[in-house]
Length: 548
Image (cartoon, rainbow, N blue to C red; front, top):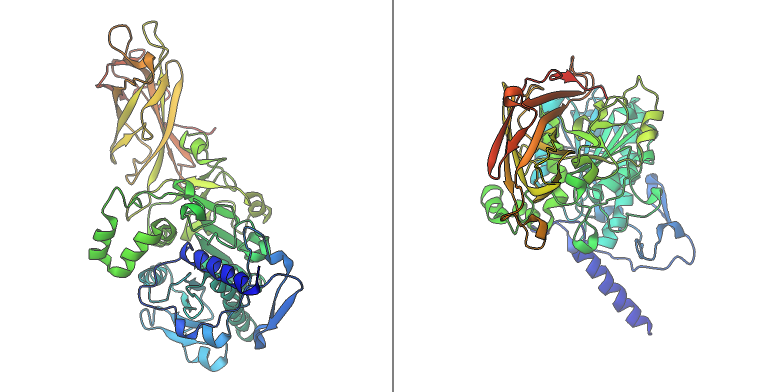
């Protein structure tokens, strides 16, 4: 094969990677294609390095290559092309940014306050600081605390050629690290007071910066980009060694071949997987008119995001929502999402079993300064699951509902169908589908458990539960054809409702349980097809704390 053919194949591969990457449509041509200086991919026959003035040098070794995960590597574009800029916002100048650099005059003439904590915001591939979400996050951060907010503008490097953009993140990370280290050296600034928040490629950029800053406080990765990073060594991607606390929200981990742009593998101290971290509720454009509604409400830019990467940008929206909400994003450590939804991981013990997702992740019990750092190490590689709503506000309360089934002599061994529940408390009412995945096989004499979420906080006191039962006949399952010879009733002894809280919230240490029994204190409720059973807070063991 001739050398020209090899170059053509390489160019085609780069173009394909560009099309399927984790980015957003370049609606406003921010890519600055007139300045593109693309290096051709090369094979790692020997190490190469390039130096960038006071920033230091970069090299590309064999460890940066993988036949499938990272087949090509190039060096970053020149600093003048990427043109990384730092735009400062404070409560004094909340909307008019100030350009700062790693020099005394620039910082002294700005509103940067060395006594306050600093939050960096890094956008991702084919994105800019002018995106709506950047302003929304900045505003919420300043509302939450009197901090320095620095928006990182690297639009000159977030190019439509993904291979080149991934390389540029290394140089942008060096620029960020240089600024932070300058503050530490010249102003005795504490690196532990720095929190870097990055989306997609910006998450890995934060990792590169953190690897060059000793004692960096925190990095939050918002759906870190998968292509060229997943399955690679720790120094190539975001990893737990990049900061004292690395928390990650995964929302689009289906895999790049299924147009999932985010990493699915854990890469922090705390890795959160809302709704299993793959498909987010409200992002299925085939079921709802998402794009037209978003176009009218939020404009062309936001509509293009919904069309191309709704799941990918949901991590941003969840984080923004978490900043000032009164609803805790409580997540539970579990082996997988199915076990979590089956109620098998609903305990909340400090340091391991549950954690707070989003802005307040550093308030997770067991991760504060009073606990040994060993606790953070123990969480590495674990997955924390939770469910969220379809639209803002996304945060929901989570409830574990256990239906204890009776087994009288006239009952079928099992029945299948749909169960819906209404939960009543002085704080409100919740209507929940207990068989949301479709008709469910219910075996009499066992307990069926599921986890549901709802924005209403019942306050740990459920007074009444109504169960609605609908039997389902399936022609592919002859035993369910209940015409003349079978019993389609559901027999229920009791209903248990557990509401989760984080440890340390007053008397409600963790899990509050309400057990409800049949009306009239009968042994069980006989619920006919399309009928209803009522359960009241009248059991002897109701309203007790479950310490298990």
